[in-house]
Length: 469
Image (cartoon, rainbow, N blue to C red; front, side, top):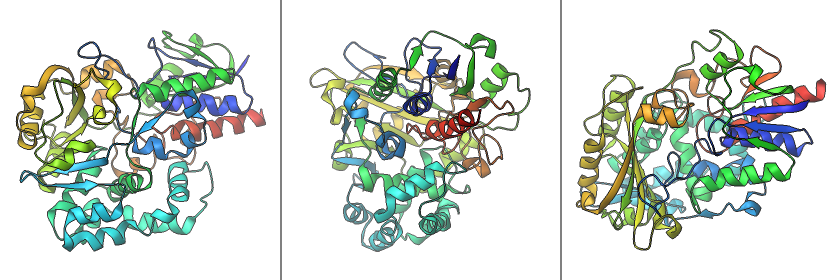
């Protein structure tokens, strides 16, 4: 009998398996698709030689993850590549605000009226970032805070809505960039704890950047899988699990799946009936004949580029998708251009680029024209660079990854108390009604992102049970 079976070979499932195998437990992973990866994959979606990331591409939480940093993933081929700028937010006048590794450079891009306010916001947390991020991403219940005072100060700054936090800024440049940071998790700016979301992304950039993985996000998953195999773990692909009886006998079962999928497989009925999924996204992967022709020079060297003219336009787009059940006319966009720093991703002189905007859950329309009209505002002539495109709306995203219910790449609404307490209001979020069954997906704390911390935290709960049994 195995000690543990993990269902789902995304970053969280693989991390959970690795953490258990490192402690001497026998582990097997079962994945429905023919390769490991989940939200960290790389595929030729458009033309031969163009390697795209179907989901996550830039990894501020990955490079800062306490779980990943504790593992020898570089030994298994993971290499972080840092663009000249982690992120840029261009404006229609051809200028841009930036999120740089340097706090001073970032503050200067906001203008003299807000530079001091930004420095006062982030500088108190940076010297204690490693401890803060461990405390922030390990809670609740898996570890005692190492620095409760700093964590409490962070909570006071971040738990109110981001609109409260950005009220300290006088000009639109800083407000717009920060609104875009919150938009990465598809949360309206007035939501509870949205200030913390923006602050985490900013601090992550200053601490270690927003890198891409050389060769694509698949490198993260492949490194985890290779390390697991060296530890004696097994991985079975092309193995769809529809019920617990499909799995071999084990002392514990760990699911890197959505709560609703777990409930169906394990027969938990309506246990997760109140779990809410968020809006979906419409994503386009591009093969380009050259770099994106951004008007703002800063955007040309940034790995990630946010698109939204101002904070009002961004909030309008977020509200349309999440609260008004309609696709925005001018979508807020996250775009990533990995090949500005990784030439292995495209043929010589060519580039890969992806962009997405938010749409209602399950939306079946085509947002391509709206996305490209937005891009043309900040990069005139963009369409002339397009060699091929691959589009994916909510139905296609859900088909690629069953955890993306309704096209929700965050695997659950990041709003209300569900920002912190997911998938249920519980002090044991990784446990389930069955004492031997656990959940470790992005639907558990600390939530979405390629960082493995949900798997790391769940593994702690699992090995405590295995030691007691």
